[in-house]
Image 1 (tube, rainbow, N blue to C red):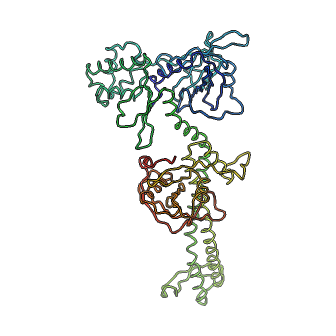
Image 2 (cartoon, rainbow, N blue to C red; image 1 turned 90 degrees about the vertical axis):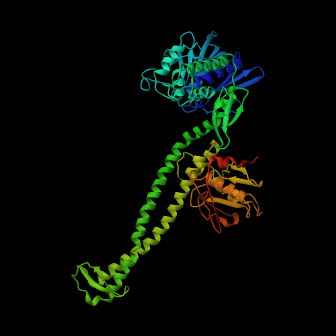
Image 3 (cartoon, rainbow, N blue to C red; image 1 turned 90 degrees about the horizontal axis):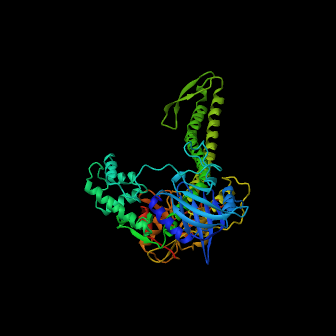
Length: 588
């Protein structure tokens, strides 16, 4: 769901109530587009997070925020420290009914004169920004994203320029009295689904809220705006007035909607969303709590993807090269399989050498290897019969030796391809900075990516592997990267524990702790489902998953991290999905 104007309205009221009169104690900028203000409010302390992330812009008071700050503060952070650190928050408001929050801050300048600064947070997707403005001059002091004319001709945001609000949208403001005839005319002038007509013409409404209005009124959201009657429009106006009347009274309803079957967060809002009555609703005391819960996992994944993109690109290039090399070597191997043809021709020439004369370009002889059927043998007219025979034997020996070497190289390259596939999968499944750092350190050590410093050789594996509880009460462990896979399989798993891995498909090592005790068939399917889910075949059906006891799993000498061989296995076939994974309990 979008961070819409309804959420912004409820949030601004909440922040104003909590922060008015509080002091900004510290200012940090842990991300290039994110600021954290540490605020002192008597005995209480708050962390106010302002993010201009293009994918997840937001503002909220954080309860769980432990990001590392850079050793050298960015320029924007230094500007904020100069102008608002030690300042007092005078108020927090929503600007108009837009997705803009304005924080008024009173502080003292170098001459010890009291001044007011405004911190504008514009929550507008990729155009989101955080802008510090001087009150009396309405002059931009700086912004977290500077916007020169080369980026936008319509609206520049640069130090020293006058601050101007984004262009006003041509929509009806629901916080004012809605003109009935204007809304009727607007809806009737556009041929689209009614819920789209609602959010296209009413300021601050997201598609989710527009669908909610239709749901509450039992109006088919897909109905054409040309077909809806005046009576339905009157009901829509009444519902909007009721909804926004509660907002004006500060009656927020912070909640988050979860699809438990798919183990997925669906929406969050500051109003009740009846349209999701079949899903699970989680309620919060504050809007900030709902925002934090909703965005924390999404933001982490987004940040990790940003940091991992260069790594993934480098590995993908190397993987493509290795796979192309394997393809070429397989073609060479097919060629080398013709070696016996040259040996046969050499031996036939030797046997019938008395029938061959120098200067001949071809001879037809009996093939005693094929019931004396005729075989044509090409000759070099400049060579003697004996030299022609030796030429065929040399080709045979060359191709025979090449076949052995090519087979050896194909095996090495297949192992490297599998390792790179597993590394890319580990990055894809990565959900925290610690795991990503561990993967990066391993790839540096293996020589796949460069670094100005070499990682420590005795780096300890990150033990934050995934843990689940089987239906029989046994622990299921899932490695999230090559290092963790080695750690689980080679150090934590006992010889009689069950070990799982997708058959000939890159994926995680999964261990079902059972120490040789009999386990339920359901437990085997649960562990196999996790192995398939955390593999490259996550989106496939009937995925083959091999399993065996751990003592049948070995790591060859010199093998790369995460690479093992196994024997005497059985195979289970499962179809991984979010719903199937959600049925397996997390281990506490």
